[in-house]
Image (cartoon, rainbow, N blue to C red):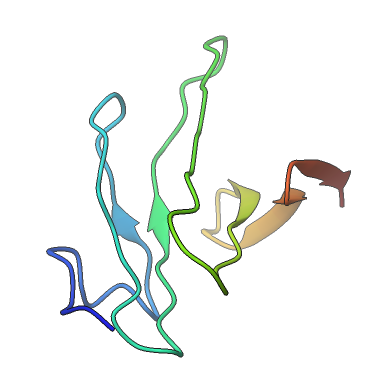
Amino acid sequence: MSSADAWEVDDDHAADIEVGIPQARNFHSSNDVDYVKFYAVPGYLYEIKTTQQGTNVNTVLDVFWEQPDETLVQLYTNVDDTLYRQ
C-alpha cells in the first residue's frame, strides 16, 4: 500500500473538487474509500473520468441531486462503464 494522498480524510465526507482540475488520488489501505463532490451548473456538460491503475480496485460514480433542504437524492450510479438510473 502507499501513503495517504493529499485529500485525506475523505472517507466519510465528500471533499470539494474544482471543476477542470485533475486530481491524482490513491487507496492507501485495503479499506480506503474516497468521496468527492462538486456543484454542477445547469445547462453545462461535464465529463468525469477515472482511471484504474491497479488490481482489486473498483471505481463507482454516483450522481446526486441536492434538494433545498440539503438532503440528497441519488439520480445515477455508474459501475465499470455501465450507467444505471435510480
